Image (cartoon, rainbow, N blue to C red; front, side):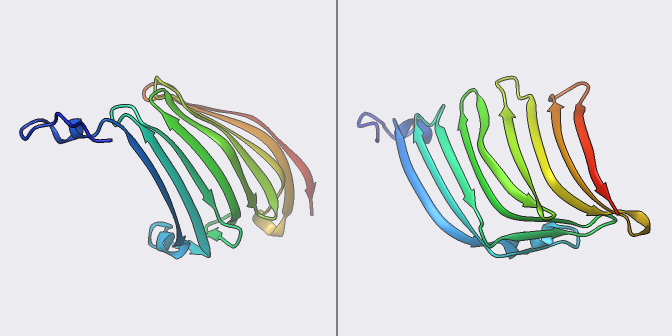
Length: 168
């Protein structure tokens, strides 16, 4: 909605009283490859975003889905992320992960958390059946529940448990 009383010289953001916008589309995840320090991204990612409300304090919902998407990160402990399903809600008070699920090295990772009004990032990750090949050919399957607290300033904390289910 546009402000019918807006005049030239008034800040352009004041022209819009209310916004209601839906965006949908598909991106090729390989666009991420140059930013992955040797990693590779493949497959289509479906994006949907809804933005509504006052431009000074809009609300947004973002959905990312990639049933055929794979992201491989090289390094000492190779990591393969696939099939992401993520939904995030944003408003003036912060952001919240409403859905966060993906495959991680043939296991599953479920994400939760968000960003609060004070801009503290609080994330949680539940791991089930995640496999890694470690040094000397040791293969492990792990479960776990991790919590990350990352304030804008001050001490950051990663806590939780990792259960080693099997090593061979």
